[in-house]
Image (cartoon, rainbow over the protein chains, first blue to last red):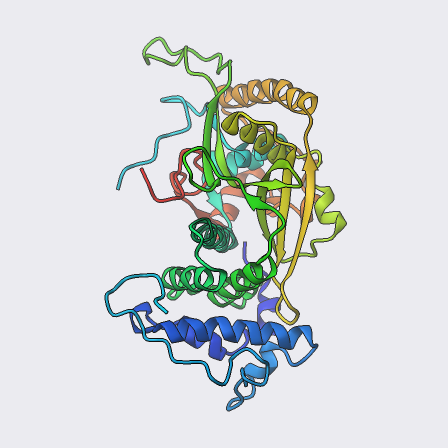
Length: 94
Length: 326
């Protein structure tokens, strides 16, 4: 059963977030770095929510804003780029 | 595609293979059981909850298998998310619905990452089977020592068919030197003490305790409810609760089951599943409440307008193998 029509009209869905944009990409186009980025995004969003910061919805409604993962301590400055697997294998090669 | 085996005796509506879902329904309300299991009606939100649950279980299983192979936490998360992404990237849900707002491809990825980080140093360790495999997503199927009374002289085997209990155990764990079945739940409601209290007594947790005991041939202390609450504006929340089951409690559950299955057979033989009108408002209200509130002659129209017909072979069939095998 669907929720009531009025309820649906009153609460429009939040606009797609940057994370959702990444997740919606074709897996064949997603590099190992992109997967790491998804993980880092989620960790940054969690850290922000734990700190009582802006919500995912609020961020999504402000185009142009992006998360600074380094400021949140989630990406080290000297992090090296990870080469995507070229042999079609599944596990990340470091 | 191989068709999944039917859980009903041939040519009848007598169910001989049962999972916790069917048992839960027949114990709650025979009419609800009829609409869901016999007729195959499901809400549109059911498919969202079902998909979300399946993806969550699959992802945590992938992670557990990686960790059992000594793959480090970060690499195991990476591989798990890579596999999860490849399954859900094209999953579109109606995000204006309550279910879709909370349960979608973005929230499943977020929930899995949060869960795995939260339990990176899990005090409950996955039990390793004699085969060396981790005890995750264990399918069980065992016979009871009785079956339906129905005998069809034209269908061989109906007289000897015992009842079967089937299902899946998410994980078996060692926790403080005791063995527990761990059952994972996702919820969009608060997972406090009220939530945890619902699992004792509980048909599902008694069945899982019994199944764990039979499958591992070891004492199982009960079930750890491993609950995750999906939140939008706050961090996802996690909580664990215990549903203990003693030997005598399990014996009582089996004794009661004999009566429930006999009752279910009577409904099927009479082709009539009565309403339990004392259960309509429980657990937030039955999804069929509006249907049952309508006059009997218009109920089919209500059902067709508000529900979808599902394929029993995929949705609630106890024989359905969610690993994708035959």
